[in-house]
Length: 156
Image (cartoon, rainbow, N blue to C red; front, top):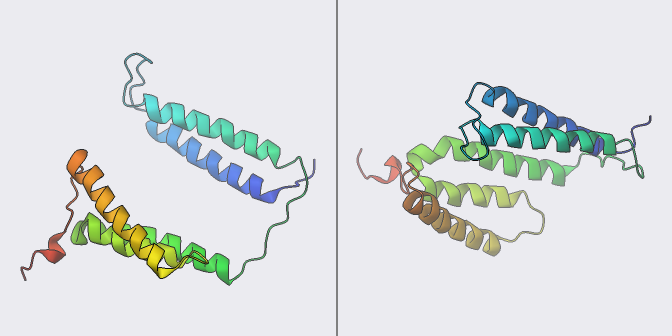
């Protein structure tokens, strides 16, 4: 067998690792039944589905037309840094700054990684996400995250 689509192989292996990790972490939780699901039911089922899809992706990588890997370039690096940087920054800021300001900042930083994405659409997206997520996750679902964090208390 000859590897024809390296991207499919890499993504399949990554999905397989994530699925296997999910199964390993949820292994000690009570499974329950379809009618009375335990805390381990959902992650176990999702982990199994992800492993099956990953194996299909790995098999697919050996068939079809060859798909060369694009060379690493500035646009790829910019996208990776923007998205990964935004994600890391979210984790670092959300407790101190709160959900709304953190989403504003991380959405704008992540948008920098997208080619052809202007400033105006990025600002609109950031505002919509901040307001929408604050309403959905904090107000409606009761997530214990402040909308505005301790950085905005005004106390020194």
